[in-house]
Structures are given as C-alpha cells and as structure tokens.
Length: 362
Image 1 (cartoon, rainbow, N blue to C red):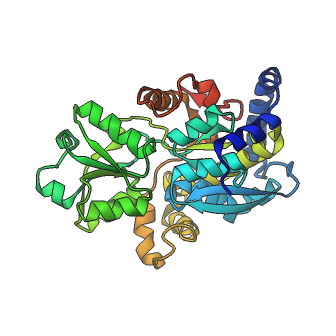
Image 2 (cartoon, rainbow, N blue to C red):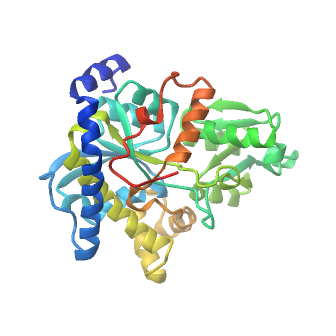
C-alpha cells in the first residue's frame, strides 16, 4: 500500500532521532562500513551476520545496472550478512521512492527523481550511497532519435531544437538528462510524460516522440532494429554523472545502523563481482558468460539466453565500488530540480543525503 505524504511524514517523524545524535554517529558508521569491507577482502569472508536473518525487501528495475543486488542475492552475500532478501521489481523510479517511504521496500537502487527529493524533504528518505555512474572510457547512456526524426535531419543532439523528448514523469532522470543536453545545445524541446519505459520505447519506435536517452543495453538493441538511431552520448554532456543511487527510509538510515551497514556490505560485494567479471574481465570469456547467466535470471527473462546475452553485455557500465557517492553530481541534479521548481525550496544536500555510510567524492 502506498500511503500519502502526510501519513508518511507522521510515521517517519516518530522514528527519527535528534540531529545531535545523528552527528555523533557519522564517523562510527563510516568506520564500521570501511572496516568491515577491509576485513571481508582480507579474509574472503562475508560481513558478520549482524542483522540475524532479518527479512528485508530490496527494490530494483530489470536493468543490467541493478546487477549488484542480483549478484548479492544469487551468490548468498545478503544471506551471509544475515539478511533474508526479497527482490521487488518496479518499472520507474517514482513508485520505488514511494514504496521506500511507505515501508513497503527497505532499500533500493534507482535514479534521483523529483519525487525522491520531495520525500527526502519531508523526512522520509535518505540517499546513502552511489550505484551506476557515467565513466570516461566506459560505454554509457545513449541519446536516441526515432527513425522518422532521424530521416528528417535529427542526426545529432545539436538538432534537437523544436523536437519532443520522452520521459516517464516530470522530474524523472530522463527529464533531467534531456534538459541538460538541450541547455548545452541551446535547444528548446517539449517533454512528453509516458509513465513507463516500455511506453517510451513504443512511442520512439513509432515516431510519436523524436528523442530519448537510456542505458546502452536498451539503446543498442533498439538501434540495431533500424527503428531508432543513436545520435550522441550522455557522458559528453554530463561527465561523471551519478546515474543511480542507493537509498532507504530515514528511519532505517538513523535507527538501523547494523542492518543498513550489512546491506551495503553485501550489495558492494555483488558490485565488485560484477565489475570484476564484466568491466575488468578478470575471468575472461568464461567469467563473462557466468555473470551473464546470473543476470539473465532477472533481465530479459522473456528471451532465450543466446538472444539476451548481447544486450546484457552491451549494458555493461561500472557500478561504484563500496557504494561510493559522487556528491558533486547529486548537487548538480538537486540544483536543477530546484531551478525548475520541481521540488520545494529549502531542500538541501544535507536533507537528501546521509553521507556517513559510504565514501564520497566531489
């Protein structure tokens, strides 16, 4: 059940501790997280089972970029950390943020959206780490044009003026990316909210919208079909963009130190396995094949493995080790939401972030 914002605020306010107590916990949280990570790497063992088999729900999208959660679940890292995890799948970021705030989901990975920021402003949500990032040298998110628009001259982002751009909802990451590209090119675009990624794909392929941006494991197969064309890269406009973040309820961030630390340790173990196999290719083709088999249990499940594998491999982008968070990128996103009037004035980075759990960069 998704509660309204007032109900969420009342419940979460009861769970929060005074800010003085939170400040005293900051160093201990980071030291605990880093110390356990070092011990895990040195010994090859998982973090201590501090949570004692606690049942938690982890939100995800069926994207390759969510592989940290998939690997941690399949290889027993969550179980080793004392967590009995149920994966719950969503089709957009906004419903996931609401599910975290209502308590239906405990932890999740998704892009920053206006809804997430607004819930943070009401004391319901905290971003506690980073996940997917744009990285120089790693193939990232693509800017796409429909075939109809491409044939009419939309062959580069410089030609976006007067064109339509797809997004799930106003204040979504698609809205942010499209706006930043348009601003850089001096283009005026219209944005069409279509609710779900599948609906955007359909609209792009049929020419109902002119352009969109999405992760490579979706972009490249679409381009291969001939109905869509790749015309640019998001990284050219948003270098080191913190695409997705790890977040939880404010109650968990404040009151569930052990459980939250255990979750991040296990999730990070899964991320390391994914990066080692897919980015560093330390295990060669065999390691890639093994990881593709694992991911296929969650991504492109409606396709045979041989047809799903190329898309999964095409979607390979590095996920942040140790859930490290690029604060500068998050700040840029927050400032854009504020400038567009999509979130309430007065929301700050401190409102949105709890930086005591993971390393940060700026």
